[in-house]
Image 1: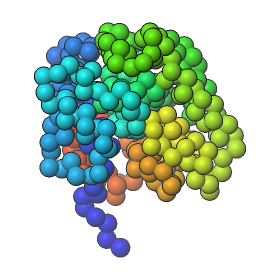
Image 2: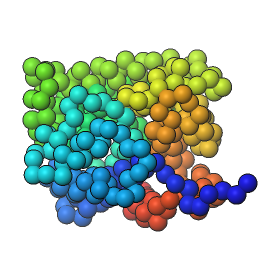
Image 3: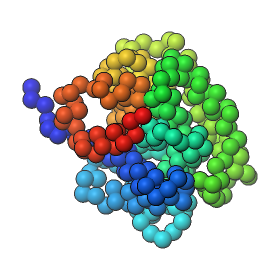
Length: 294
């Protein structure tokens, strides 16, 4: 059977590249911070929204928010405050690979990129956790201890609202304080991480991981089910992506996240050459990967 060339990606990879280009532009202008990142990231998301290649069944929240970002309004007024869809964290992996950032920069950038489209506190927390997982794996973290590390990180950050990065986003919710707003998101992520820890001890590779940690349409479930798919096959990236893709849920986003975790853990060389030679946007992926290969 002949394999398609190029091997087309989904909107998940398109938006991942948009985020990565936004980071690169921001860091070319100086130290990574919200003032440098918001403009380039907003431009990249709006360009994606208008692109003729944006024909891969993109999510409604991303499309609505990007349409609103194509204006003079503050980004907080474009953010969909009630949405915690997986579009928030399916694209966040690049910030976990950028070397030399502080924990505050990494967390702030992860939450800001989520908030431009998905303003729900769980979307912010899940994106932060996804970036943290990529960061830990890329620096040699042990996969089997990852769920515990993420739970500790969630507890440590439960009451921390990143004012410098998020501004007045919290005021568009019903929460009485910024701390109450962000804690609501961390609490939902802590609940799913507890389920993930249980699943890592009991789940069978033959069973759909969605049965253990959810179908992945929402951010915290996408994080947990993508992680579970990876943790079932931590040294076999092809099997991890296959397990993630063959699920009942939002399989492309679950597979995108499982692939990000596997790539962070094993490196780009772990993927089959017949995949990497055919992948759409190959040159962009390779150049950005080389830029942050630490």
